[in-house]
Length: 135
Image (cartoon, rainbow, N blue to C red; front, side, top):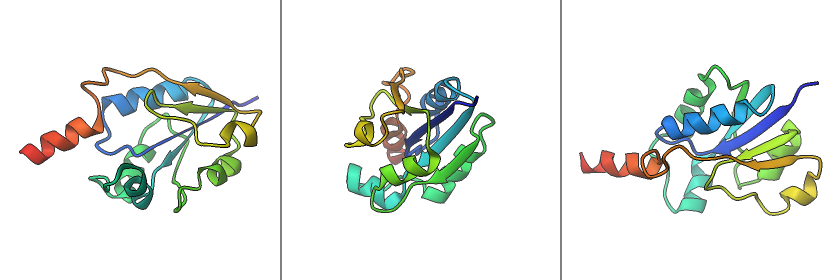
């Protein structure tokens, strides 16, 4: 029986911290599904747009060997809709992510696991963005 794992993120400046997160998620099951955040949703959550467009971030994630399916999330931050479509056994969260409201109630069969970080003071998109603006 296959174990389907779902994780999501912005994946701006796809860096070693992201790769560590995605590999950990991949190791939890047989199929890794990755949802890349829409530009508009990132702006609503973080108050700024990502440095790279959603299609570019999606293509980089799709290019990873251990990612079985990568897709854009839905506009309007409708995370539960994509969870329903993918129907994962496990949702892997990054060390700095929180489970969306109603996730546990809506998907009681789904195990939610928070993964560890890889040097969060070194590998964080905000660090890459700040160093890019200083150059």
